[in-house]
Image 1 (cartoon, rainbow, N blue to C red):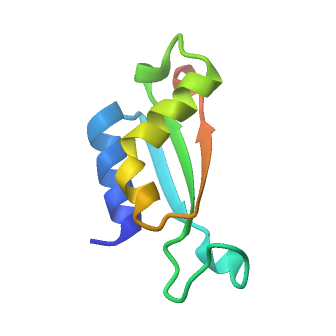
Image 2: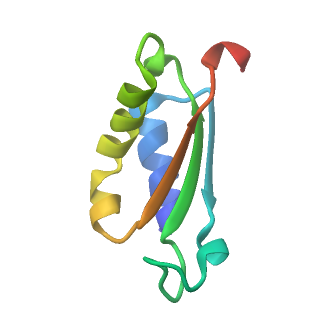
Length: 89
């Protein structure tokens, strides 16, 4: 399973999102810090979930980071998180 698929599966299971995109942006960072051959180092997550209702943006981001702790330790160098309002979905 690719890192992208692993991230998608973990976030889907943990947060039951109404909307979820996991975008591998590794090629855009070719030659930058943390990049390695084969990619799977830089990701963008766009997520909308009712599980984040009432949480601050910091708490939302911490929840995503905690859910992906193993992946961050295993070589994901950068993770951009965009939390979308669940009410808009």
